[in-house]
Image 1 (cartoon, rainbow, N blue to C red):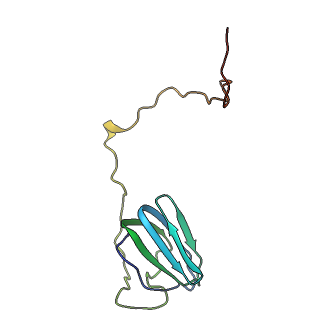
Image 2: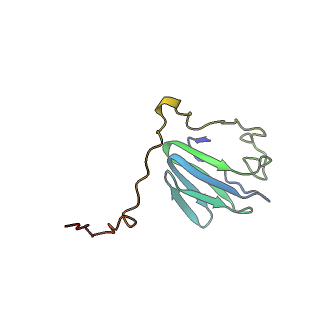
Length: 124
């Protein structure tokens, strides 16, 4: 989903939600205080916990993982309630087959080659 400002305070009676930030920055307001998240970071909000997602850097793209029956406004029905959310089939768009990385020889790790951190191989 794409956030552009603060959403409504709400909670979910039986559903947990996971917010994974793809781009931008998200501030999750909780009654105990805010939590800031950046790209690659995620937060699980347990059911019953009041929260208010807020985009603090746009564009803020978030992958939201929750049961399909979860209302976006929790237990309250407001003008922002969406019974059916838009589905995103792929994010980001798939790579063109010619731009995919070709399989090649795998290099052994430094440790497997006897080259641990700070060590040099001396074959002489």
